[in-house]
Length: 401
Ligand code: GLC
Image 1 (cartoon, rainbow, N blue to C red):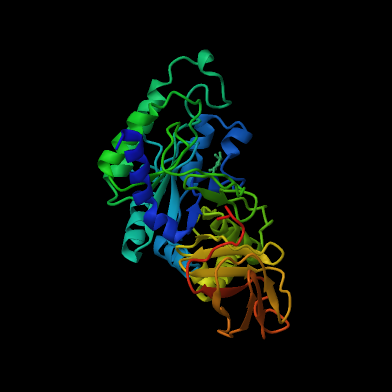
Image 2: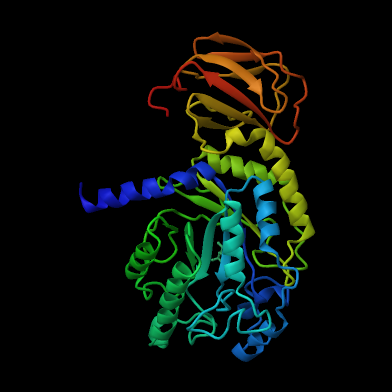
């Protein structure tokens, strides 16, 4: 086996649990929650470092209870959670020997990452750390200048290496390192960095934003399927970090359709919440996650461990597959009879996950009719029909898989 094959295989094994999980929570939280205009406020409003540092004096998250966050995520059917341990502003939610701009050394006086990690470990929630390589407080970052005009980036790079070592050492087992902000590109000694991370956390998954390929691709606010493992991250409204004025939340139904479209294309879905400065999830987000949980409790079999199906139903909705089962996530309910085509193997049974109601199956070669379903869908946002095939589901179209 040559080294590149080995790398590929170990990525596949590392990704096993993650591809079973399919659905995770992203949390963007930091001192930017104080002005409450999103996580890019320092850049957007050209704060000086001194001005920005004062936000940390007001960042005192009295309501922060990560066990509650984790419970909300678990009830929504999410299997992993990724917290911004530091964003582009350089403020660390964790204790760091190489920076004073941290939660434990400012008003919060707590290692917020330690508490989060403990809550995840306790609840069996897989744990991910987001970390921004760039830090806007260093020369050339605010605004972004080309490398040749700045010269020496090594203090910023050294700090990032040191802090990533701390994150991989001080908080127990870590499942995901979600790097971001490799600006300027090419200065981060990414291969060395990832090597260090893997030596400290051998089973960790690393994303693709450091300049090294990592284990998985990360399309942002977009469902772009990749040949390699991938995860689409999405905002629930229009902002990652808390923005008091952003009430443009997607409905639970719209979010579930995004989740399903990721799974139908073989990808994961990471849904973001931006807690406020006190440490509470916005009430709209909590309500949306509650509704998502209601759907997941009924239809989760069509998500966990599911992937692309060779049998498709584009006029009706997405299809996902687990072993001999294909799940139709019906967005356009056709009525009491559901017709399917190009089924290359025989359908044994069909039932609605919401009610358990079965259909009578009529199959003529590769055309299938499911008779006896209700005229109206049991769940207007997206009812799921489970089809069980008598062998591997196949398409009757040669070469279509
Ligand atoms: C971008 C943004 C950042 C956000 C991230 C999430 O890189 O700079 O604010 O954290 O995407 O994918």
